[in-house]
Amino acid sequence: MNQNLKDILFLDIETVGCVESYSLLSERLKTQWARKANFFKRDENQTDEDLFHEKAGIYAEFGKIIVIAIGKYTKNEKGEIGLRTKYFADHDEKKLLTDFKAMLEKLDASTKLCAHNGKEFDFPYMSRRILINGFSLPFLLDYAGKKPWEIPHLDTLELWKFGDYKHYTSLDLLAAIFNIPSSKGTMDGSMVNEAYYREKQLQKIAEYCVGDVVAIAQLYLKMKGLNLIEEQNIIQAS
Image (cartoon, rainbow, N blue to C red; front, side, top):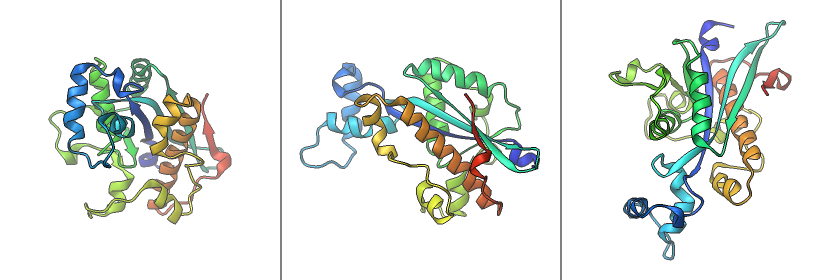
């Protein structure tokens, strides 16, 4: 396995609203959400509270991270590429980010983060939540003073665009066209807030998130003209 593959850390995050319902927001944040919600398209009877439940998790200012899943390529004794995955999941975002940040800071400076739509969503969201929780940014997320082309991270969506910046393609669609086993199961991103707050299914959400990391790592191999990883070579760390 070449060094370029060894240096990649694949990741995906799952996010929800910072509180279970709009009524639990401080008055100050309710005012700010109302201003934000004015820019959303809404159905005739949709309230700010309805929109908070539906959309708050998308925005780092009004959401929080409940799961971060990661994956790194491995190589077995037969020389076959494998994937080792792990996840951080916690109701306490501060603890989750403390553990994730500690892991990041052990990595070599040559490590490249890779996510699907990571440059627009995962990387900035994590950076904002790390700062909101009172931490300094780990070096792999500290872009201060860097030009866009100096940031080494990878984004499978950006790779698929081939410079066509108006084009969005979901991970699920790319997994389908490359015949990558589906990461979705019975859940998709729009169901995470409900599954977390109403159904208390953090473990299920974590497994879904790991599935996305596997799909991203498989997609990256296909984009390099390489074979998919065999299922028996995908290992989840405890």
